[in-house]
Image (cartoon, rainbow, N blue to C red):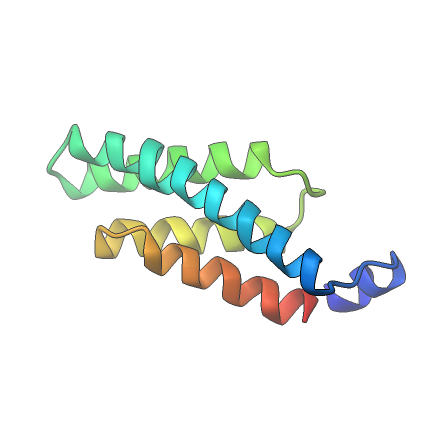
Length: 105
């Protein structure tokens, strides 16, 4: 992924990192903090949490402003799984920022 982004001429400076963290924060609040949480609160079963994770992952992947890739789906699915397991949005945010550092740093 880093090689592909480097070839495309993408690199992040201070402003790029600020924008990346801002986008990740907005996405996590919207997809995990609102959509996934609201769906999880409608049910108390593991099946309901799994369904909420799936819906939020599909919504986040479909709304991404990036080309569809296995890395994109894995990042969104992993963040959603962390939200489902912990019941908190911040672990998903940390995972997404960590992935951005690994991929773009």
